[in-house]
Amino acid sequence: MRSLFVVFVCALFGVGGGTVMVPMLVLWRGFDEKKATGTSLLAIVIIAAYAVISYALFGSVDWVTGLLIGIPAVLGVIFGTWIQQRITDRVLS
Image (cartoon, rainbow, N blue to C red):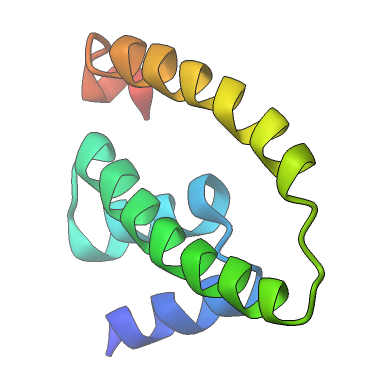
């Protein structure tokens, strides 16, 4: 039942990855912070893939701008993940 509530709240707030989903997974599901972060990112990827397909069908995607923003952001993800894996869960929380 709690998982269903997490899904509802995340959908209501546009996933809210780090601000809603991660704390709920930690507090209600007992996940450690790293597993909660990875799990929320998987949900975001699925939701984002569906969203971009939906918007693209209506011609509402600027592919060049999206790639110009998205590709460099991957470097931030790689660096952020590298840092997060070296921080203890206590410090991270």
